[in-house]
Image 1 (cartoon, helix red, strand yellow):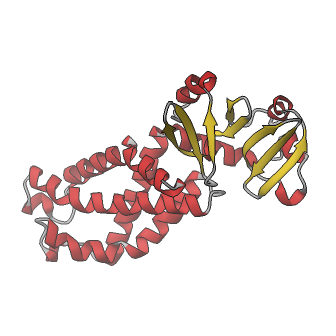
Image 2 (cartoon, one colour):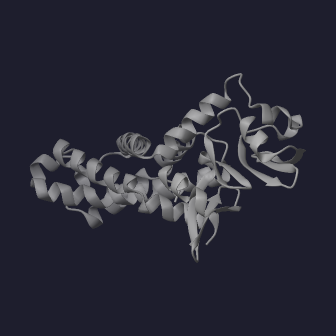
Image 3 (cartoon, helix red, strand yellow):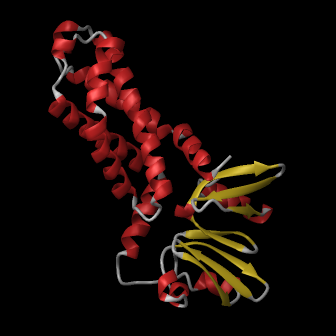
Length: 255
C-alpha cells in the first residue's frame, strides 16, 4: 500500500472523525436549525443531520490527508484551514441539493448558499478542533512548526547547505557517515549517528533502529512485515523498527 493509502487508512481508523461525526450530529440535533424543531422529533433530527454531517466529514478527512501529503511543510492548522476554505466553496451547493433526498428536512426549510457555507465552516473548525485534541501527532506537528518559525535551528541542520536546510524527516547511519533527509532534499555528512542525534537538539523524534532516527511528525503509518515492523514516512520511504525499539515506538503511538 502506498504512503498516501496508508495515511488515508490511518485517518479513518482514528477515533477523531467518528467522535467528530457523533458530537456534531448531536449538537445539531439539540440546536435544531432550519425549522427542524417544529418539523422533526428529536430522533428524526439526529437522523436528518447524521447523513450530511457524515458526508461532509468524509470529504474533509480525505481532503486534509491529500493536502498534508502534497504539502507536507504545512502545519496542522494551516492544512485544516485550507481544506475548510475550499469546502466552504465546494460543499454547500451539493449538500443543499442532496439533503432533501436523504433526510426529512423539506427543501423550503433549507438554508441559502451563504448560511450553508457558514455552517460548513463551523463544522469544519469543530471537527479540526476535535482531532487536534485527540491526536498527539497533530499537536506535535503544530508545536514543531511553531518551533521552526523561531530563531533556533538544530546544529545538524546548520551543517547542511542552505538549499537543504529544513525540517529533518529522518537520519540514517552508514559506516562513518549519516544520511540526513529534510523536506528539501538529502545530504551525506561525515558523522556518527549518535552525534547526529545529539545535534538535533531535542527535535521531536526518536531512534527506531541502531541505524535510523525519525521525526515523529514525518510518520504517516506503520506496517508489519512478518515479525518485523516498518514505519511509513510522508516522503514515501520505509524505516525498519528493530526489536529493541518497538516498545518505545509503540509508546509514542507510532505503531
